[in-house]
Length: 482
Image (tube, rainbow, N blue to C red; front, side, top):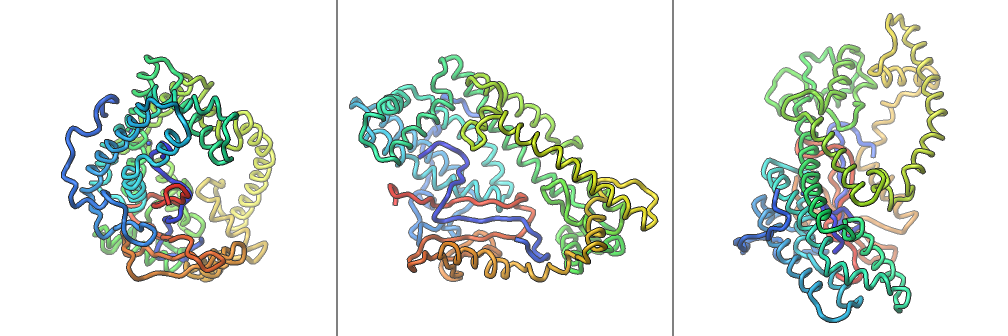
């Protein structure tokens, strides 16, 4: 088991989640003492579904049996079991080999892996107060758990010994690379630091995990809190009938009859800005969106953001990097901060020139309609659509019926997957439990007709779900683990 929390890996059983409006056509990480035992005593785990691997096809999670109260005890026992496995590996007297060190590391932490995958998926896709409490509690504990492994001197000595002699070992390419990746994991986690610096690093990691958790919680909470309330339907002129109906339903769900609510998405720009005729409402939506995290009050994220940046900088320098950018980019395609900046610098002049041309065109449109104002950021999307219509007779709203969700899936995504890779998809509505009524399940078949994966789709926005689109794995593909 590689040591990353939360886990989001390529998978055999995956969830694809996005936060599109259900009523609109679709276009398709940890304050426990770092040296403390993760469990004081074993909790009562008899009914806990995370104790064993699911018996369903592809180990499909038993969402029908998983309850919020199962997560915390499963995390505690999972960390305890994982640490016992790690100590057994590190405490061996035999010289390190692939079979007695790396392979057991790969096999370790099965229960912790099971609960982590489900929990962090739910924390993003279908959270609630209990899950958020568990996130806050477990973030520093998981950070400390990871540090206890990656800063274990005996374990690192075994990994380093294998790394130093891997060129003389008869290894297949996969095993050769795996040893190298483990070594890099340990070094990047601080295994080469002095004892005093390791303690400093542990404290930084614990605070960073808690701060990052708090940051993400504040983002979701404030998005829900700052939904735009509109008093009359006339103010929504320009929106589609579907969007207006969705706004009315959102108000009813908030027990605000007779009003309309426009929930904010996680992006700075909001989709409604491209069609709302009411300029004052466009300004209100845009400024509210940009104010998130800096308005003061319970969900203000400025302190979190400042502290996260400082911790990352201090940690990077402690680990021998110039700054966090160099640390974060080291294992990416770009590799260095300089490479990223060079690419951005090459793009910026052309992008700015194009933006200025667009700005002039948009201002001309404002003036031609008798608008006695200077183009502002909340006008940009609205007048972009007007320019497209005037120049090309193009109306994006007329395309929406062609991008209905099932059409995009069947005639777009699944069609392309079959043509390119030979994959086919069959929706399953039988024995697979889901965590929310809108979630759908497909069985994925390879070109030879054999089952390749299960695909779980979760496509609609809701207040319990973070914005954006992402993929998480519930069960990862592994030749070793089956």
